[in-house]
Image (cartoon, rainbow, N blue to C red; front, side, top):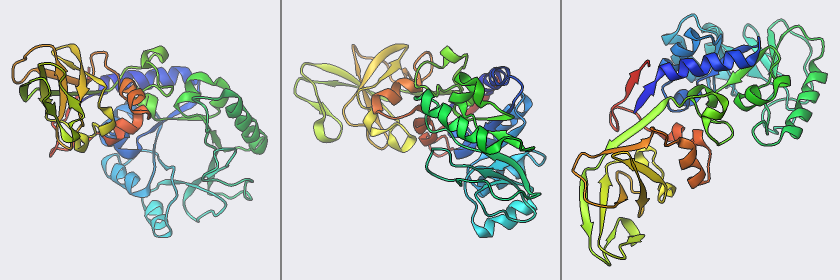
Length: 332
């Protein structure tokens, strides 16, 4: 796993330009969408982001130990026992109508997402520093997103607190959503919030994922590879066995997608197992032949379309821990 913090820095600067004066808050929850929260947080703050957003109080506490002075906003609900931790660590919490004392809070309005949030703002309190909502369709339905924006604008008119609504998709495509701050996650990592090519929005992928062919095997006609005999050779065929599987985050439903072997596209065949996958080859290759799972123009978005999911579900599930992979961080 190679994490290119130079690409992340350029993505942050791109988002700062697009935000048009609104602050950019970097969303680094879920271990920075699988990219490494601490490294990505450092790079984002150094490149123009002014706050960090996470999902839970424990995520925020881990970052507080790493970056003592950062502004940290917890987007998800906090359990009662966590409020004291948040107060001690100077965290900011997103809340509904119950305002805890001694903690800076952002009140969340539910304008159409149908999850966390309240329908009406509570009475003003000195702890309230922001008001926010969450767009349900900024990547797919502009009309509904704009209806949410109108509800939010009407409900918060005249308030002298920070108003923030836009996610990555809205920041890039809905200028009226930017208000005082934008909360960008997926775009930070050079992933398209629209499922297309990130370059279309001036973004560059941060993650590169590589492995190698550990075994090149000749299957005779009628022989198979992998569990369930999902791939049976119709004629003599070479397959390369790659030591990556769903335990590493390469999902079972990615069978049939393509990877690069020595720079050439090759199809993943058979069932992806816990620790291995097979690729169909045109000819024998040497042991150690380079395999690129993500990179060199092969996008996470392509794998996501094949699996019928979204790009950041795939990156969140990538296991870059030392027991499964070698993680390299560079700054290009």
